[in-house]
Length: 89
Image 1 (cartoon, helix red, strand yellow):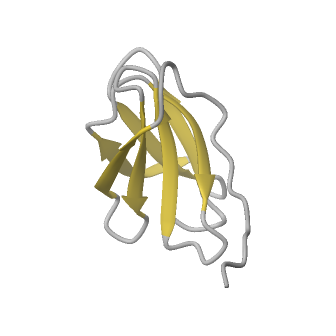
Image 2: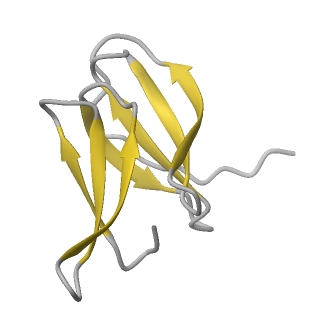
């Protein structure tokens, strides 16, 4: 997954398709995310955060391997995931 790709979520299922908008071809599938809804990519492009309505969580995805590396419980029906830049001292 790169900054040039699009993420299309299967809200009736448990996966997200990564699409190359230049070729309109599926270049990868992110599995095991129950009812995905909303995606945000970290500023460095290494991670995607995908809300999972069915799991009441946000899944952290390694964009290089397209695998879920963590699941964070966030409450009921997470949607419209965003990334916030913060400096912690």
